[in-house]
Figure 1 (spheres, rainbow, N blue to C red):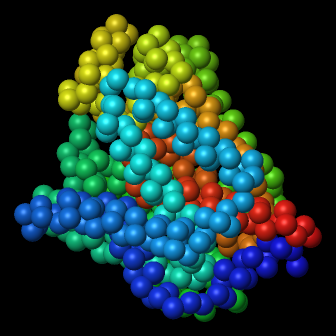
Figure 2: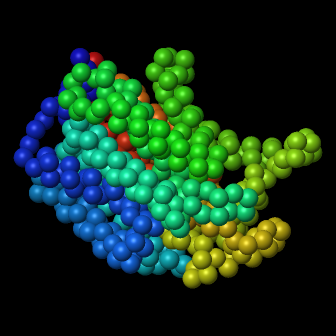
Length: 432
């Protein structure tokens, strides 16, 4: 038995006082990271969201302080190259926001919020056993399911009219955000349905009919959202896990694979796909991916001509309150684009806008270096859930600006990073 296996067994079997309280705390944090109560806040006059957000950040700060300072976990931190790549990423985005003249204070505040979320994820990975972690996530997913079901049947809450369709948006504001969250819930429930019966060391017992019912409900909501990206983010990761599990697509370097795929997709969409515009026109299609490629080119042009190394800082530039908005508007006009869209619709392009080339390169380095070590997570359920999330996250980032939001995806990303680093360190100390 390897050291990584022993580490996982230790995480599963360790017991301590306050486990129930920690599960409750994590559940509350996850529920808010999911965006609850969202649009349902209007039912009670919009009085819940802001206090709940403040409470969640206070809870995370208190837990991180207790775990790293009072509990002494910071003294046990091992500095390895994968860990250094995470630190380098935060250094790059911190420097970018510090020197930016566009978001001098709010940028540093956003960096601090992201750092707190990452530290909280590391604290959870270090102090929770696998069973309690799964239990907390399941309860949060169940609450999201109930809220979305309520929004589905309440008039004026769950649906929004688009140009050609009426789409389900759940408790969120857009169908794409809704589809992204629902895809995550579906993948998590599928993981429980497949792996819980196989893992005899877990005592967590959830009736299969409940999992199936929630899967069917979320599936119907996903179809009602009319978002092709959400379907891709659900089907492809599930298929990827099945193939990887059976050895058909056994990737030892998952991080490098997905980083190359993400960069390759951008290059293909902006440089190669336009060459086939005449062929695509035969089938009534365009080569600009509903305007996305022109947006990506315009934003890249703006950053590379204005602030190529460090971008404009960690902020939201998609409203008239930001001076960067007018820079984007001018370059859009020069490239024949109309109104400024809300977001760049690609995580790498959004990172380029915020943090420049240093931020993008440090981000890609962190993903490649850390997730290449995911093979050290010997436990099958743990490994496959990480693989599923990585596939989901990277596919979602192809068409949306995930990391500009400090929320669920960001938390789970750093939670996976923390678990991988723990398994990697255990394997280095006692190789099999």
